[in-house]
Image (cartoon, rainbow, N blue to C red; front, side, top):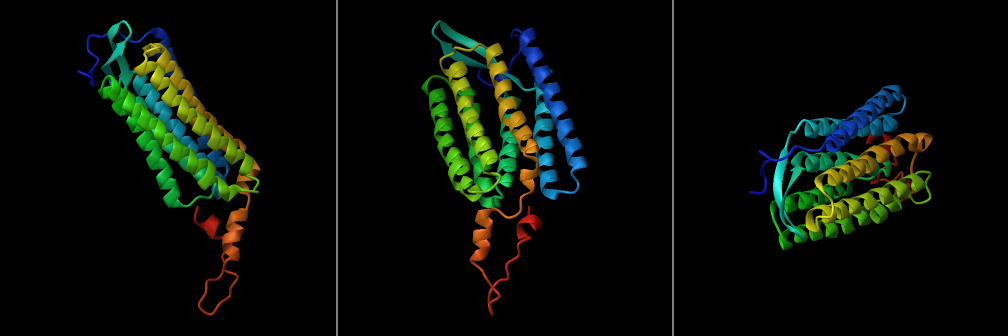
Amino acid sequence: PPGSPAVGLPELTGTSHAVLWGACVLFAGQSALHWFMAACRTSSARAQQHELLSGAATGLCALSYQAMASGVSRMVYEVTAFDGQHQRICFSLLYAERAVAGALVFVNIAALARERRPPMAALVAVWFAETAALFFGNFVEGWSRFRFLIAAGVLLVPQAGMLLAAMGRRLHLSQLHAVYRFLSTWCSFCSACYCLVYFSSEVVVLFNTETEIIAYALLDGCVIGISSLVVTCAGPEVQVGLLPAQEAELSLYPGPHRHGFYPNPDYYDDNL
């Protein structure tokens, strides 16, 4: 039955194992770089915060790929191709790693935009739901699997809307605008590519297991690895003070008032 352990099935190819171990090594090296940078950037709490999030995301990916290369969470499920029924191997850990590490990346991007916690929580929840929809599709067949793919595709709309519109407005006319625009567009595009790979692998069965593993490893490298490096390379731009949108918020409270609120420009640095 779908979701049962892959007992008695052919092992993964040598190329698949090489890709899993290679991804593990690359993510581990990048994680070590971020932890080192976090230790060096003690003078800036904001830059250190970004490095810690990047180090956690890439470190989780390294551990997950090591586990998958060792056969942890390997599952088998049925797919219907043009030439009949086939059994495919997948890793449930791949979806868990993508959900948690990807969420850390989105938290990092939201922190770059100085976003508040409720929109950040909404963005992470949509990402979890999108990843879960693709994972649940492995346990059904036929049109039911395609419906889960449609659900994941629909969830791309609010995700892109929050990244590009709701959060992007806060960075208008700031030094971080170009970096944030690239990251939000890049992650939205790669999220759509996850759905495209799923469609090619699980729905129309154009990709075999080996190609699927390679494609997902590349996408994980793009979403988690490259995005984390871009945040690191932002450098001095991360150190900017109040964003124009934050200054506009403070200008609503010129103070002092008898029953008012005194503007505190350090609020956004004290509450990272």
